[in-house]
Image (cartoon, rainbow, N blue to C red; front, side, top):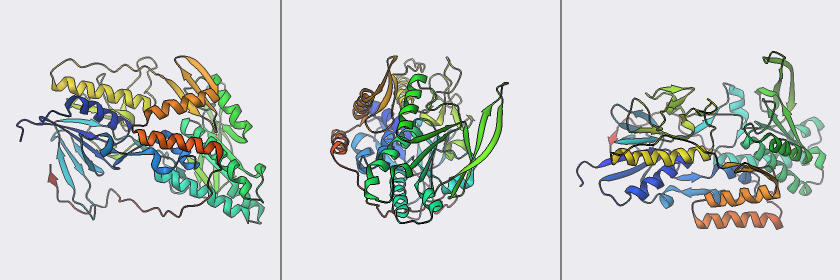
Length: 452
C-alpha cells in the first residue's frame, strides 16, 4: 500500500465530471500515489443534447448513453446518491437503500459537478402533471405520451376532448424548448398518415416563452430565422406568456407586457386545453448543494477565479452547480455543456497544479459558437462570429455533436440513426414502460456508515 496516497473524488457523472476525470486520468492514471474516484447516481454519461431526438424516435435510447466504466477506465466508480458533503471532515456520504448500506468516502481533493434539476418555481401542480426532458426516462415517457394521445384522438368523438389530446404545449423558448418543439412537430407530421381521422391542421404544438424573444443569448437574426421556420411548420410561438398552473387538463397562462417604464405589467389571463405539457423553462441546483456547508447564492456554490471554493482549498465546483460571474457581462455564465466542459478542463489543470505545487490559472471563457437544431435537417449556428442557418447549420451541428460522442461504436450508431431517418418513417409503437418511484431523500433505510 502506498503511503500518503492522495484521493481525488469527483461528484457527478455528467459532461463536466467525465471531462475532468478524463484529463486527470491522462495525468495520474498510472501513478500509484494518486487515486481517482467518481460518484454518480447513474453509471453512464447521458448525452443530453440529443434527448429531443430520442423523444421523437429519431435516435434509439441506448445510443446516447455511455457507461462510465468504459470511458473512465482508471477511475474507481461508485453508483449512489449523495447524502452529505462535509468539507471540514473531508467526507462524502452516500444514501443507503434497502439493498445497500450508506457509506462515507474520504477525500483529499474534491470536484463538485452535480449538475442541476428541473425548476418548477414552486408550482406543485406543474411539477406533478408536466413532462420534463432531463433524463433518458423522461424522453421515453414523453414519446409514449405523444403516441398515446394520437391513439386516443383517432377514435375520440368529443371535439373538445379530442382537441386537448392533439394540443401539445412546450414551456420555455430556450435551446431545450425550441429543439423539443421542432422534433415533436416532426414526429407528429411523420406519423400523422397512420391516423386517418387526424388531419395536419388538427395537430398543434404551442411554445410558451415568458421573455419577448426565443433563444435568448443567440444572435437575434438567427433567433428570428428559427422563429420563422418553426412557424412555417405550424408551431405556434407565444412570447411574453408565463404559465401559472397546469392540472393535467388545462394550462393557465398570464400575459406579461412591458410598460413604458420597463416594469412588468400582468394582464390577460387565459388558458389552453391540453393533456400534455412539456416543461423546459428552468433549472435549479440539486438539494445536496443547497443544504451543503458551502457558501451559496441562488442555490449555486460561490467559487473564485480558479474555480475553487474559497474557504476550502482543494475543493472545486464546476458546471451547473457553480456560480461564476462573467467579468464582461457581470452575469453568470449560461448553463451549457460548452461552459461545463471548459470549467472541467481548467479544474483538472488546477488540481494538477495543486498536487505538483505549481501556479494555478484563472478561468477565462471563450465561446466556440452556438448551435441549435430546429427540426428535420434545419438548424442555426454561430461559428467564429459567422452566422449560418438552414441545412448547412444542421450539417455543422451533426458533425460537432458526433465529434463529442466519446466512443466510436456509439458515433456509428447515432450516424446510422440519422441516415435511416432519411429513408424510413418513424415507429409508432408505444412501449409499455412503467415509471418506478425513486427513493426519497427522507427515507433513510440504513444509517450504518462504512468509511472508504
